[in-house]
Structures are given as C-alpha cells and as structure tokens.
Image (tube, rainbow, N blue to C red; front, side, top):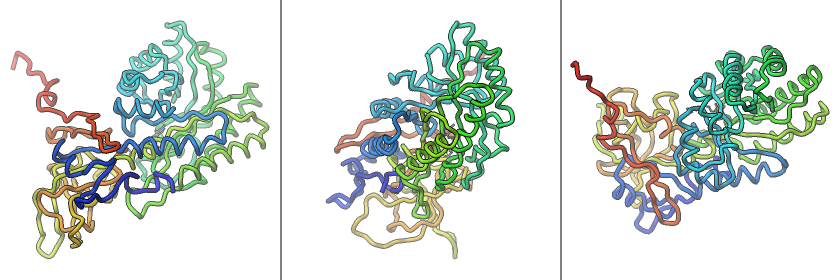
Amino acid sequence: MSINQNIKPITTKVNEKGNLEIGGCDLIELADKYSTPLYVLDEATLRGIAREYKKAFSRLETVNMMFASKALMTSAVAKILSDEGFGFDVVSGGEIYTVKNAGVDMKKTTFNGNNKTPDELNMALELNVGRVSVDNFLELALLNEIAKSKNVVQKILLRITPGIECHTHEYIQTGHLDSKFGFDLTQLDEAIELILDEYKNLELMGLHAHIGSQIFETQVYYDEIGVILKEIKRIKDKFNIELKEINAGGGLGVTYTDEDCPPSVETIANVIIDSIEKHCSEYNLEKPVLYIEPGRSIVATAGVSLYTVGSSKQVPNGRKYIAVDGGMADNPRPSMYGAKYYAQIANKKDENEMKKVTVAGRFCESGDILIKDIELNNPQEGDILCVYNTGAYGYSMSSNYNCVLKPAMVLVNSAQSDIIIKRQTFEQLIQNDVIPDRI
Ligand code: LLP
C-alpha cells in the first residue's frame, strides 16, 4: 500500500495512556503545549511518500520530481523535500521567495501560472528559476522582453490544454478544453513560430500539462502523456526540432475517507512510464526528460489538524452539532468543495460510545461545517478532535476570516516536536493596518 492510500500518518497509534500518538508524540500533550487549533505534520510520512515517488519512477533514467508548493509551502517543508531530492513548482513571487529563503537550488524550480506579473517574471529571472512554463501569448512576449533586458536566454516549457477530462471536482479540473490555463493545441504552432523566429531570448525545452487534482483514474495519465508526445512528434515533423522535456503536472488523489480509493504512486508511475515507452516507440522519439509535480499526494496524509471541542447543540429531533475552535479559515476545503474528512477523538480509547455528530467550525456562517454526520466517540467539551489528511491545501488556503489568528504548525518525529509555523499574534494580525492621518 502506498502512503497516499492511507487515511492516517504512518506513525499513528494509540499509546499506553489511551491517547492518539503521531510521530511518537501524544496528541493531547501537543494540544496542551502548543494550544489548538494546531496543524501537526509527520516527518516520517512526508519523507516516506517522497521516497515512494523516487522509487516508483526510478525505472526511468531521467525524471525530475517537483513538489507543487501550492499544496503546502513552509520553509521547513521546502528544506525537507529539497533534501529528499525534490525540486519545486512555484506559482507566485511569494512561493519563489520562500523556496529561495529555504536554500533550495533555484535551477530545480519551474514557474507556473496563467497570469504571472511582470514583477514576478523579473524576480524569477533574477533568481535563476530553472524553467518558466509559459501559459499564453502575452507572457511569451513579456518574458522575452525581460530576458532580453537581462541579456539571458530563459529555458521555457509551453503549457498546453490537452483536452482531457477527469472526474474530479469541477473547480479543480484543469486539462479540459474550456479552461483558463495554457495554450489550446490549435495555438501551439503560432507560439512555436514566434519563439523560433522572434523571441530569441527564450529557449523552448518542452511541453507541460496538468489535468486536474484529486484524481483516481489512471487512464487519464496514459492519455495525457499520449497527447503530449503526439504533439512533440508533430512539432518534430513540422519544425524539425525534437523537444526533450515533458512535464505531466500533478493530481494523484489521496484517501480523505474510506470512500476514496486513489491508485498507488507505483501504479501511476508505471502508467506514465508505459505511456512514454509506448508512444516514444510508436512515434520514433527519444525518451524525454520527465517532470512531475505532485502536491496533495506528497503532503496531505502527513498532516492532521487538532481542535478542542467546545459548545454543542442538539437540534430537537435533528442533528447534534459539536463546535470546534477552528473551521473554514484554517481548512476551507469542506465549505469550498464539499470535501469530506475523517476524524477521531484523540483522548478516548477506553470509552466506546460512538455518537453520530456534525462537526461545526467557529466561524460566523452556517456553511462552516467541517464534517457532516460522523461517528465519534462520545465527544464532550474539552476533548481533542484529530482531523486526518489536512496536510494539503489547508494551511496554504487559510485566511484570517473573522480576524481569527492562523494556527501554528508543528513537525513531529521520533517523539520530538518542533514549531515550523508560529501561531499568529494579534500584533501580526494588524501589522499592515494603517489609519490615515486625515480621518
Ligand atoms: N501542477 C499544476 C500546474 C497545478 O495547477 C497543480 C494544482 C499541481 C501541479 C498539483 O496538483 P496536486 O498534485 O496537488 O493535485 N485547492 C484545491 C486544489 C487545487 C489544485 C490546483 N493545481 C483543493 O484543495 O482541492
């Protein structure tokens, strides 16, 4: 079984006190020491999945793993994954700044995005990002100008929309034709002509696609690689250049609840590699350098969120709500996408009184429900709730809604816990507020 097929971090167990433990740390002690809400990240799970990816793709001589920073970007995560041999997909000045600050080799970064600003492109070239995945005609012209002004030749990929639909939430599908991302295949030749004839400060290395996120199917990856290689063959025939790099994006799913059944990392790797081999031989192409950009599947399972249970409400003849001290600001996924999560009470091994409840957040809107209808062990005020699989797109999409402070994050390993994101303070909350003199 691969780590993305687990709901819980691989070190999760119940200790002799009857409490849940992750990374050798008692979750109740963590909640006491650091207070809640608290993000907990298990280093063994994180390094474990990184190694699964490396092993699964090792059959291919040339593969570059790029972690999709958008899933969870903190300096410590960047340091760990860079130690594990990963590069980084970055999509903003902020992500570039963070990975640079963490000491990442900037040659191992790819700058993605559908509307990179001139300032961000400038910064990317200044800091020597390895590849820019160019998304549209405006960006091609802009990037060439900037590269020219710096007297450099920037290596680029072209992001394409491969026309593949995968069955995931509509908001996180990206490879279908009616998408804001990338060049439509019918626009590709014009982009290549411009690069070859006019944009002398750009060097085209290959093609990039990303078909969606939280994907459970394998055929879509096989087809995606097929479309990319078919284009490379067409480009070779028409322009007499053989592009040497392909970037297949990210998207592998994880197991939020036992309704989810994503393929293993190994299965996905084999599908991608088989498709490369089959299509390269069919089109008589050299095997390209492969880039992949997993985000969610690298960090989701390693992360859990701890909350303290507070008030509760029994609706007469209806649901029982229990409220926790966090919610849609630290994990917007349930309210945004209807995402489902699994959770357990961290401090109750002995009781066995499962009760069906709905876990509500503390934020001022009815839609702030973290988990609808879950069986929990007799949840009471003061209990610690552990919500699993919150490592991806939780902290990275968190907000200060209702002026609630962002939680801290701790990294756990071998019974040690270290803060990797400090809890926000009220001073920090208003540090950018300005009251103009005239009011
Ligand atoms: N590469 C590109 C170009 C992407 O746009 C993305 C995700 C990835 C890689 C990484 O995909 P992953 O392996 O994480 O599925 N906020 C949403 C997910 C949005 C994904 C956007 N792009 C969520 O919480 O479900």
